[in-house]
Amino acid sequence: MKKPALTLLAALAGLALLAPQLTAKSYKTYQDVPVAELKWSLPEHQEFALSNGIAGLVVEDHEVPMVDFEIAFSAPPDPADLTGLSEMTTWALRNGGSANISADSLNDLLEFKAAYLSVSAGDEMLWLYGSCFKDDLPLLLSLGRELIDHPAYPDEKIELKRSTMLEQIRRRYDRPYGIARREFYRLIYPDHPWGRETGNAGVKAISRDDLLNYHRSVFQPLGAVIGFSGDVTADDVNKLAGQYFGALKPTGEAITTLPPLNPPAASGVYYAYKDFNQAFVAMGHRAIRYDDPRRPAAEIMNYILGEGSFQSRLTKRVRIDEGLAYSVWSSFSEPVPAEGTFLASAATRLDQAGRTVAIIRETIDKFRQEGPTAEEFDKAIKAYVNSYVWKYESSDEILSRLVYLKWRGLPLDTPQQDLAAYQHLTIDDVRQAAAELLHPDNLIIVVVGDRAKMDRPLEDFGTVTELELGGE
Image: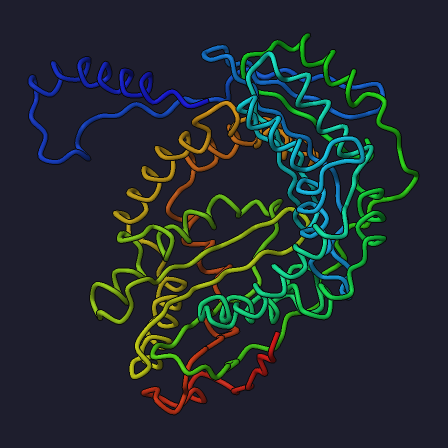
């Protein structure tokens, strides 16, 4: 639960304490004002464990009588021939009710109690999340367990979700940037869950039995983590978690993990024709894993290059200097189980598409060779470090991070370790990361638009492969 009033009061108090110093000495810019190194750690939390192996966490926050809880279950990626299975399962579970309580009755009860209950899934995890008044926590936990033990999965809900998903697939080629991004990840992660998109064939093939099989494989204590935040105590939630989820039994089924990555597609230009009045560009390559020691330096590197909005190199060069794109940015991901991606992207006029691609690539290459300036590095470190604590503004945000770290088997003090790593980076660390991790000569470049109206031949940037978008 957020505390904006307390944050504002703390800020005002800090200014009041600083005021005598400011009047005693004048400073030319805000950068000249002495600021102590940020000292921060996550609020106190406690751990517990249920008898069936489910790990537990609690973050107490007694400001208001509200409680959030979430349970993370390990989940398999969707099979290649049943893409969309996890999405359909979680939606139909929550919106289909149980054998003992209809979906309408469940929604009416939650509305009456001003409570919230949701189920969602990703490539490796499924979350059961709830929020309610403190006194209603036993009720909400019992409803979550009811959905797990007695799911209804009514046919009419399955078909409703199926029709919605098919319509979303039909419309996705109307969103040009989505096309560029989707095709980029297909090329970066070929024949892998991270590169797959939900398709017509997979959605049409999903049966109710597939949903039930997925359900049975996921809802088990193996690898599960339950967490609570809000107006509760560790003793309270330990008892309640044990009462409602301590008897959850193993299914005997091992969770299918993500398969190893295949090599990415060859570098070059991948072109998809669409009759748009703009060109949409996505270019990049594979990056590093989460456990790479260069990760903090890589994140600062990317902030300076393309993530830092109007302070970034790409925005200054492509948008401000050249006026070629309203939005241009870069991202650098470092997932835990496998290599992430470096991605730079922009949308621009068709008659400036070639120029935009060239300038983005030149900017990346120059940054790789020279790294950041001292001023860029200083601004980036201050911005990154001083904004870091706002990632954990509320107790439920803190809980979500802790649950994820526990589920991953990572140290719970990872946020503090990361902050310390950012604070102790040097400009040479970031320059080395840029030199080692940016590969402007080995880019996969996806361009969506009408090449006949572009200012330069796409062949100027490498071998061109035409992509068939299909009708899904």
